[in-house]
Every structure is written in C-alpha cells, then in structure tokens.
Amino acid sequence: MVDADVLDLSLADEGRLKIEWADRQMPVLARIREGFEKERPLEGLTIAACLHVTTETANLARTLAAGGAGVALCASNPLSTQDDTSAGLVAAYDISVYAIRGVDEARYYSHIKAVLDRKPMITMDDGGDLVSMLHGQRPDQLVEIIGGTEETTTGVIRLRAMEAAGVLGYPVVSVNNAMTKHLFDNRYGTGQSAIDGVIRATNVLFAGRTVVVCGYGMCGRGVASRAKGMGADVVVTEVEPLRALEAAMDGFRVLPAAEAAGQGDIFITVAGNKHVLRSEHFEVMKDGAILANAGHFDIEIDLKALRAMASGVRRVRQEVDEFSLEGDRRVYVLSEGRLVNLAAAEGHPAAVMDMSFANQALSCEWLAKSGRTLEKKVYNVPAEIDREVARLKLETMGIRIDELTSGQKAYLASWEEGT
Image (cartoon, rainbow, N blue to C red; front, side, top):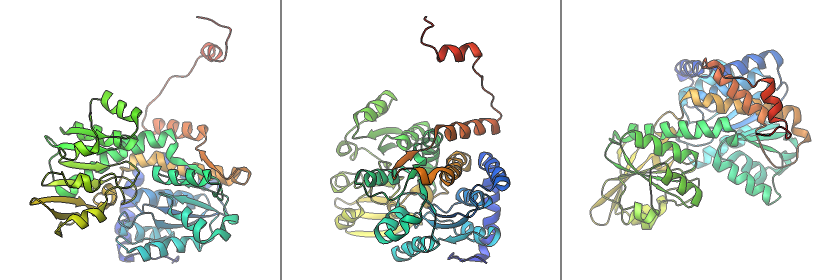
C-alpha cells in the first residue's frame, strides 16, 4: 500500500465505483490516458497536486500515473474532499493521497507538506497554496521544479503578483485561462454546481427570489444565468465597468453591493477577492437572507465581522449556520463560507471537468518536454493544446464541423485580394 493519510480505507470500493462513474462522463481525458499509457511522456517525474479531491480529480491522477508519473495528491480546500474517493485512489489505484474532509488548519497544511516531501518536479495547484508553501517555507526545493500548473482564477492572481514582484521560482501554466477551461468549467460548471450546493444545503426555491451575484466574471455569468433560468430576479454587483456593462446588456439589474444588500434573499459571491460581503452589508440584510460563497477561499464573506455582530450562532442544518442579528433578524451562512459547490454538493459535473483536466494533463506533458527552457513566469496554455481539447470534445460528442477550403485559406492568408 502506498503512503497516504485518508479517513477510512474501507470506503475504497464505494469510491472506486464513483470514480468509474465519473470516468464515463470524461471521454477526452480517457483518450489522453490511452495515449499516455502507450507513450509514457511523464516517465520518471514526480507530480505534487493540491486539488479538490473529487472523482473527477481522481481520473486526472489516474491519467498522470498512466503517463509514468509518480503522483502525490492533497486537498486544496478542507471541505472539498470526498473521503470515499480518497480511499479509492489509494486502495484501487495505488496513488498517494493526503486528504480528509473537515480537517483543521494544522492537518490541512501537514498534507501539503507531505506531498512536497515527495520532492516533486512538477506542481499542480488549485488556489496557490502549494506554490506559496514552496516559496515561503521550502525555497531550497525550487531548483528541483521543472514547472507547474494552476487551475483557478484566485491562484492565477497570486502567481501573477509573484511574477510581478520577481519572486516566482519556476514557470507555471495558467490552465484557468485556457478557452476550453474558463468558457466552460467556470461558466457552466460553477453556474450549475453553485446553485446545486445552495439547494442541497437549504432546499430553498429560487423562483421568485432575489438572488444577488457578487462578481460577473465567467463564474458569475454562469451563476447569474442559471439563477435567472430558475425564475429568480437576479442582481449583479461589480467593480469592473466592462463586466457591469455586460451584465446590464445580458438583462440583469446592476447595483452597488450596499443597495443590493437590502434587497437580496440569496447572495452568492464569485469575486475572487476578500470581504465582498461585510459588516455594512450585513447591517441591512433581510431576515432570512442566505449567504453562499463560490469563490475559492473562505474570505469573500467577512465571517469575523459577522460573528462579532451576532448575538448568537447555531448550526440549524448540516451545511447551514444561523447568525442572530440586531432587529430580530437571522442570516444564514452556508458551508462555513467555503466553496458551496464542493462543500454542500459534488462540485462541477464530470463532463465539464473533462476539458479542464484534459488541459492539465496535456500541459504537464508540455512542461515535461519544454519546462526547462521556459522563463520563470506565468504562461497561458499553448493554443494547440486548447484547440486539441476542443476538437476531442466535439468528436466525443458526435459533433462534426466544417473545414476551410483551399481558397478560403488563401484568402485569409492574403492581403492582396480585396472585397
């Protein structure tokens, strides 16, 4: 048995069945895995991955292992781990996993240290905690790293700040910026899974409710469109003029958060920033307002301020904490302000993670071949990888598209032919 720290290995059979179920919805990654098994492009490499430990991630780990890599996986969020999946990866697939749902902060970081103890040559992050620990606590290991990948917006923000400060120790591929990632995973994945999490936690009806979506990036677009489709009156809050304009053109009301705070029944933050909802907003919220976060870290809702304002806090449902506020008002926070789509539900559907993790696998292959020649900065996923993922996805969906004729190719390459 490989080295690991999981809750209960007796859950392995259940986890394996769920991993196999997700695999059936991930045909692009399955094809890449078949190619990796034959070509072994990651032979001899150790990959440390700090990701949400879900069935979809399990199939990514299987793909990397099929390519010849030694894989060590830990969780990128204490409440996103599926314990049966962790057990299944260890017992059925011999992959080292250090992840248990609901661990405290000390054990969470001990798991990150455990994957770094494996002396990785490639890192794979979702939020930047792995990279941060490497740079902050283990700078001696940076020389061993060929490169890394980053899955989410929050992590990319941190990486670009490190690059700008001149402290980034190795090249990192921003998988989040692949078109086949953020156009689909962020929009369709977060849109569906965030609302799924709110519903599972509360069983609330969206129709007829006012839903405030804080942030109108790709994730916010997805949440807003899905809430609207369920009959909600959707209000968007934003700080970026172009995104606010787009939200207005898409048919949503756009308001400052201070005004929206008194109107909302359900609040979903997807801003990638701290204290998007804070004390001045809590002060005017309706009795019964529901607060959920679908951004990466549990800092988008200022829970410290909310606790200071509350006369009492109690757990009223498995993923729901009730805060009693002045004026006989109650505000409900879901999943302790952590990612509601993973803490209260199962995260993004496997079919959309198929593309995101295909980008991860192919980016690792690219780093294995080219990483030592790259500068220490953040790179976008190479366009040819993005197009290949899109091509494979269409093919597995049974969708065919046109090809340019020779005359059309010549026209697009020429400046001499006029109108």
